[in-house]
Amino acid sequence: MMVLRNKGQEDGKMFDVDHVSKMLKNGRIKKNLTQSELADRIGVTYQAVSNWERGNALPDISNLPRICEILSIDLYDLIGVSKSGESMDEILSGTFEIEKATIKQIASLAPMIAPEDLSSAVRAKQSDISDFSILVKLAPFIEEDLVEEIGKRLDPSNIGEVVALSPFVSKDMCEAWIEKLEENDDFNLDVGLLSALGPYLPQEKMDHLSERVVPDTLIVLDAVAPFLSQNAFDNLVDRLESITEDDYMIGMECLSPFMSKDTMKRLIRKIVYDHDE
Image 1 (cartoon, rainbow, N blue to C red):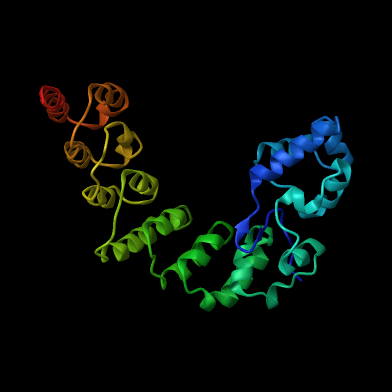
Image 2 (cartoon, rainbow, N blue to C red):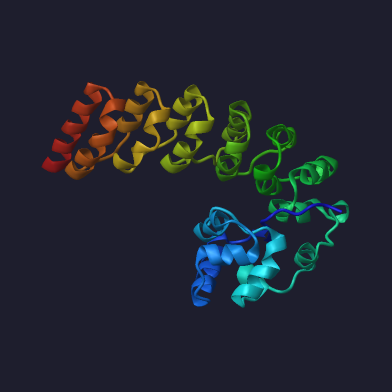
């Protein structure tokens, strides 16, 4: 029998932390309880209650029945799931057996499973993982080497999957996935996705990927600028089709350290040219 942790999912949907935090706060206020008073009645610290209400953590599953009793809240209303679902009933009753679960069930319930139990189960069933969507659910809760071990034999279907997994793997692994996507003719990239990859790719690769991006405005480049060489950033700025005076004034407040003086001059000329038109 496995040990459970404090968060969970049903049918692939993770508990909505914001929903739980609001339910807890509203329920406590309706009962006219302070955080310290609620904490004392549950048997936890007031910091724990504070973290729950701010959405920084979820209550341990063992505390849920007591919380519901004190606040007069239905358990399923508190956690924001329907009352259907055999796996969730088993989780809440403590009878869920991980050894008999499918890899999809395990991935959906990963936040509630103790790390050692989860890693053991995933290693035993990793051959059943055939697409990135399962790995995306598991990655935040298993070791980096296990994520990479599984990821080496999978091909991402879109850049969003790589962005989702990039915090949980090495830069080399992230770059390898990107190169697989680049083999596809329909591989597209925008400034937002490029900036999200910035902390997880070498600068040389970021420079290369930036060649695929045509920005709409100067302002949107502030998130990607720190991850590009000056030459690559200058080229990215030069691909702006047009620029307004407001865009220039606001953008230059944060972007001037990242571009050359020649690029700044070209931007000014473009503003004058667009204005004359």
